[in-house]
Image 1 (tube, one colour):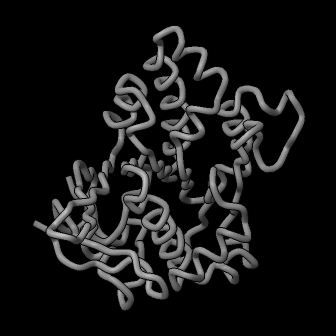
Image 2 (spheres, rainbow, N blue to C red; image 1 turned 90 degrees about the vertical axis):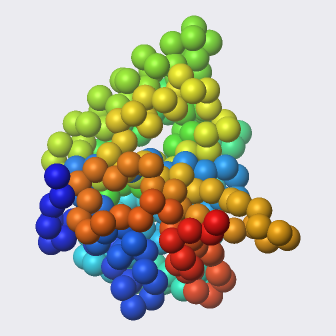
Amino acid sequence: MSITSTDLFSLGLDDHDRLNKELGGGIPPGSIILVEGDYGAGKSAVSQRFTYGLCEEGHDVTYLSTELTVGSFLDQMHSLSYDMVDHMLDENVLFLHADIGDSNTFSGGDEEQERKELLRRLMEAQVMWDGDVVVIDTFDAILRNDPKFEALVRQNDERQAALEIISFFREIISDGKCIMLTVDPSTLDEEAIGPFRAIADVFIELEMIEVGNDVRRQVSVKRFAGMGEQVGDTIGYSVRSGTGIVIESRSVA
């Protein structure tokens, strides 16, 4: 059943690109959005485009990155023509950095206790979940660096670990919020990623396809519950410095 466009979280930038139009006018409130793609497929660029467009439309966004510091986040957004400085100063976006490279810490903490149960600490960080939309880029890195999740993996109980996280996510979105997760599926077992695919209201795969000597990108929409206008099955796109996401065609075939 579709809902009216006024009920959607618009991705905006209609005079900049056609992404919002191609995705039916926005994302439905109360949704879990899963964006999958291999390394280099453009997961961060797409999530950053979502973040900027949502902020431009007046929504509050929390953006948690496992790779970027606040400085590199602002630099990368600027390189895509998504100027986030004013939105950050106006507190429309809350940027958080999960430093998991060596110490599994969150937001720069370095105490041994803070290295444990990373997922639990994220869930208990109430400020993180105050926004209309919460973006976690990349979610697989959070899972792989959480000791409790790793322990369940060793016990071949990835599904149980995933279901506990999903229960928490469902509680968050029951208030009409959205959670967007980016995942590199090559880094997780099917038992770990399967439950998230199954419950995602919006499930998008970012694909890279070789055409001659070129590598073209496309958004493949696997599921889009609660869509506004019709959503295309495949949306060709590129990521250009100084421009950002550019929608090229519905298909790259």
